[in-house]
Image (cartoon, rainbow, N blue to C red; front, top):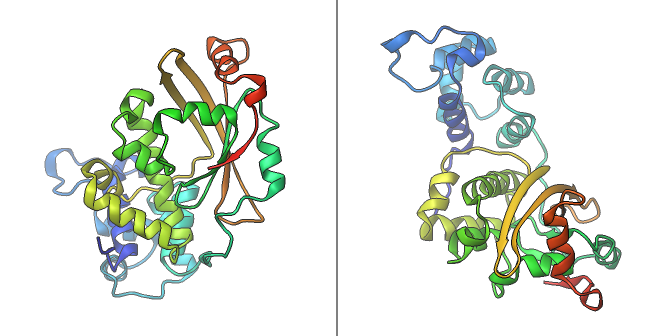
Length: 279
């Protein structure tokens, strides 16, 4: 599926539609409003630019906005820090990271680090959310998806996804929003562009979330797994960027100490089986 040429305009329109007038201190206007969210002229006033200039920005006719204008537009629509950074990248004002050789190779020291979390699920993801390496707990949690090593494909193509991820809508949306953020950071990554094209064509659910044009990093996440013979496991995840391999991320999911989830995690893996593996 070919990506829209005016990504900046699509992103601005999507966020303008999501921003309610009351969010930015404007009157809702009752039933007189004919558009969802903010009008173009309202964004222009809030950002301190002319209506014509903002219209040209959305339409792709203004190719070189200044950092000050982009920042003002982002503030006008109350964008999150992730969304504002993405906006700068789309405007060509933030250096996009380029694909690097070896990005899918996990450093041996990072593999050893995975073993340092015997009571947590720890794994390394590529920019396109391929599982590059995982410890024993993560291996056990993802066992129902054996043969599928990409988190996006697990969520949107595997028949057991909604059974294992009982809060599937939340996890699925967060994953797609993070993937779009990565697409802006790594515009030349064939793994990301190929995955988006494939999923947009084959999964209506993915396509619907992708078209929301929303971005957010997965700094923290809460996931609930249900595994046969084990039951419900609740984990709080923290995500860490791997600085010597830009785009790689280490995710560590831990249960609440002393909880039933903690006992379930302990029972997942026998001591002899503990050890990180390349996916």
